[in-house]
Image (cartoon, rainbow, N blue to C red; front, side):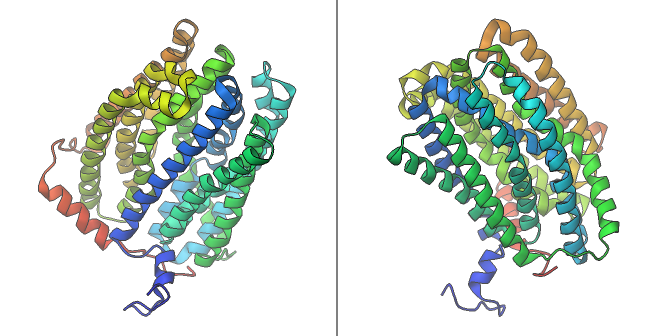
Length: 454
């Protein structure tokens, strides 16, 4: 019974909300991400069909900024908080406080810079679009807090709450769009404003749920500000470069292609991100499981995950090649079907990115976050130079090809770093029955290492 007590003496509902249950939480994470994907598809289809390629292009240009700028507002803090919470359970309250303070400071600086710089990058857009983009820049603070709260919840065993928040965000937004459609019709303006409202609602709800698991404290705050800040500083280049690498294509396209082409690219990009469910699961599950283990255990868990993610990515790429253009036509309308070739290339880029993310987590878990930062820097340089060279001649297809090439460069460098930086071998590529048995055992054995109220 949901409200009953478990054999451990705690109410079962409480244990589920706290994220206990071993393998259940991993399967729950995957299922919740699938639901998120479906909801995001629904919102993407709604905005594309109701706004058309030109309106979708304006929408993409305006709503790009909160997620992009939050990469600067977080600047390595999620990894730093996870690392210290897992390594030092007794300091949970002070570590959380340090994360809140540092996130607040960085977010304010980022938003202030964004309010000045962002409108200057959108000189060809209408006055209404420039006002909307300012609201989106302010929403960067909400995105940064959501990112921090998500990592704290995962570290404290609140995976169920984290999964629920991931589902609620697109659900709230979809409901808002449906209300607007029924009452006044969907325009770029009300679509953007409903997105900001959804972000604020999820930020407040997640903050309330985090306080159930961890209370901020001022004890040892100075010590943990230094520790969290130093680790974040080491991880920050990677996070900033991830934000740049993940958005540089659209940043360049905003100023170099017609708004309609940006709308086509945005739809192809959005559909190709279905692949990144693998990366999301890796970030939410693999890194917290690897931290605080022996190096041999980290490597074994990583190698198993690498094989599963690689084969899942290859299968998804093959499926998308067969169905990509048909899906675009069916889901978004005939006006978006011409984005089919762009979608195929972006799916390959997403697959390479997912595999590379597994590799990067091994370096982070072993305490070497600097190497992935270097790799991200190289990948970003390849992408930036390639975009400036190819987009003027080849447009959005050239942009997609450059991003896929940059992802391949990152993956090759990360695999090479196994020998050069970690002195470890490259994972075996073919699966065995023992891979399935091992992962099943690890997921079932996983338990939160922090108690409530840490």
